[in-house]
Amino acid sequence: MKKLLFSLASACLFTAASAQVPQGTVNYYGVDFSKTKAFGAYDTGAEFKAVFGRINTLTINEWDKYNPGQFIDRPIAVKDITATALLNNQIDTMAVIAYSESTFTTEEIADMVRRYELKETTGMGLVIIGDLLNKSTGRGTFVVVCFDIATRKVLYSQSAVGKAKGFGLRNYWAGALHSALKSLK
Image 1 (cartoon, rainbow, N blue to C red):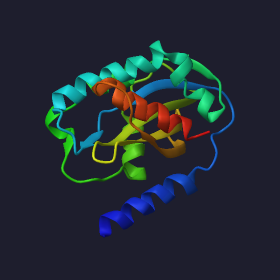
Image 2: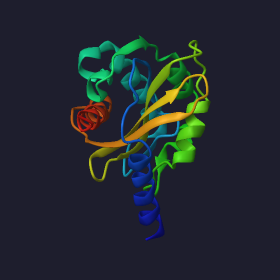
Image 3: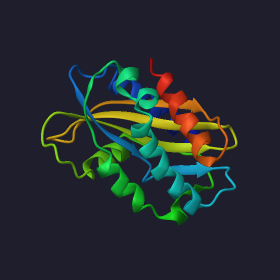
Image 4: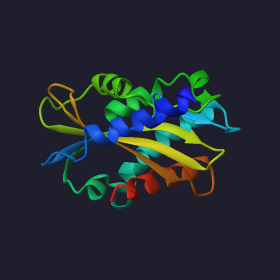
């Protein structure tokens, strides 16, 4: 019960603390799966790690479909997934599989944003953080985060849940990502 209340409180904090995306262009840095948990899945952590990299690349290769700017009504100035790809490559495969459901706190989101190694030193950054991929419900939870690049202060964060669909591990969870992004509009 405590976990449920904590999860609900965290979701409310994400929504209440950041109701609107700040004005202006944003720099897109990809999908950060470095702390993502998979719950109820039969796939291994190594299989998820490989798929996470491919989904991050998919957002660039199929830009018209996955462009997060179209879902938050902000133009994208820079598309560079190098920072998230680096972190995704360092995933501890033993830590991917979860045995209980949980979601990120606002402090965890802020800590994750501070880890990005970016070329840009000013402006607004945008990252999508993979939170929980729940195979038992067929839903993926992601957090869309806008932050000040210079200070790394989180300016906007919104949790979004999407229905997974598609054939194969990559397409199934990429479907959840796309569905979650569409729910932002």
